Length: 437
Image (cartoon, rainbow, N blue to C red; front, side):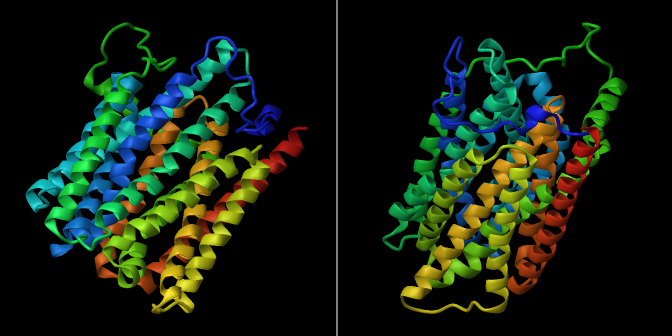
């Protein structure tokens, strides 16, 4: 299917766009963006510390592996759960998993971390499908009520959300750096204080989520007005999971989705353990990840404003893939830990480059799904989370058993395959566009 002409209009527009005219829905965008910032500044910083704080019998990395394995499987049913609960209720229920996981870190044992991680897998699947569905529904309502171009508003709202969300790494890790800078990174008192502060932040985010307006999912009501039987539910679920895979565009985007999760897990598990901790210490993880988050946030905003269709997306993704590939090659072929100023500067440069790459992938994957799958929003975002969480889970499980060099080879192979598939998609869509004009 060739992209329509209006798909080439900017996905993120300047702030002077008339999006406030008529009935405005921007209040809900501000609320959901702020709530996710409060929740994920805590979770993101805690996740960065798992491989360096909960090291006994690899409890931290194993818990994260279980979390993302659970996330992968529950993402297969998340779209159906969100349809049943409604996006707002799914968002609120999803926050409980993050709260429980942080609470488990106050007393990290196999009996607290593993159940919390498993439940968080379910909670994460519905909060992220709920987020994509809620934000898209909000944008469409705003566009309709104000007679605006739908794609432009979707891009504008996604730009605000991802800009706010990406800053969670900056804020959360600055808090970590401030509370652990006295060298208490591995002490009970230091981590107890830190996770207690994180619980407060998550509680505020959950409360804020309750102020969202309720929104339905258009077209999902049962036309019979009756509850489906078990067989019908299974058939409907199977169609929801499989339907997006019939679209060749989804098949070509999937490698990029998988790589997106892989590069995130590499930062959380391998970069923090093998690059940051040996040179900057456990307390330095917060500072390095703050740089990562700042560059991620800035790049998310900048990449969104330069996005104007598949052509610009191709250029931006190419730049992000190139930057991250340079870092992998540097680590594989050249880098070795050094002392002094360079020992501090090198990990921060890597953090900045990896953050730029992540910002590119977040914004451009969201743009692609918004362009191509507007009639199956829940299914598209569920696919994104299935493939992201699946690769993240794999990294956390295998990370304790393979070397950094082996992981870097995996990263290089995966980014090559993902980029190749994406370039083929770009060429294919361009050819179809020319043949139809």
